[in-house]
Image 1 (tube, rainbow, N blue to C red):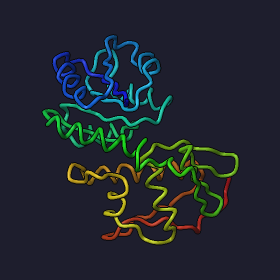
Image 2 (cartoon, rainbow, N blue to C red):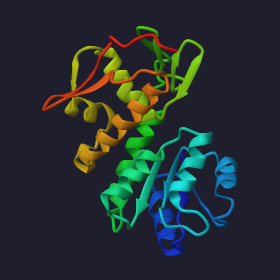
Image 3 (cartoon, rainbow, N blue to C red):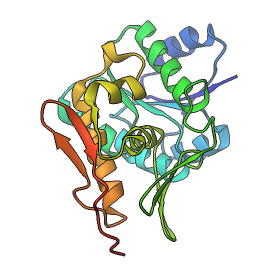
Image 4 (cartoon, rainbow, N blue to C red):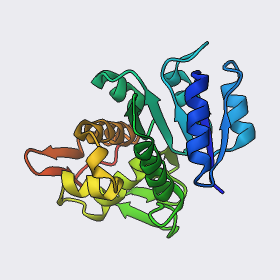
Length: 233
């Protein structure tokens, strides 16, 4: 049974979410003490987190960063804040997706199922336990790591999926549509700007290996991972 951790201070909404999601045989746990969110997360060990932005004590962005230090489980923001910058901040702080309130419960369910499939199910990145190598850069799909020599950089599931596709087709252009298809199977609900945010995050992960300007935007077509980077350490 998959476990869902809800970090939301609207008691009525929490109750409604619990009632709705419990019908689909999920185990639900909601935060009660907003000063110990991380401790409750570690104790419950959920498969996915539903997280609001506006919370007592610290905001959702803070707790998203704290959870990311401990886990790569999917994090889905559910918030009334609908500005594009709020969505960008959520993704840049480690979230996998963002839903604005008010919402249809069926959409929340669809996104939860999609993230669970991507992380643990038939589409999971770790199902094959394999690695990809381009030059001296190794993507460990199972461990969600990007390695170069002794240096390791941790990845989210989504970052790993993007790199997997780009490295499989290194020096070739991968279309935006292909990346969206690879990452999300519910594209009707995806803001195209989300992919831009993830591409920026992937570039930052490459930069931690001193690989600059390797991931290039091909205007009107997509993205290309160039393999002519140096071996600077």
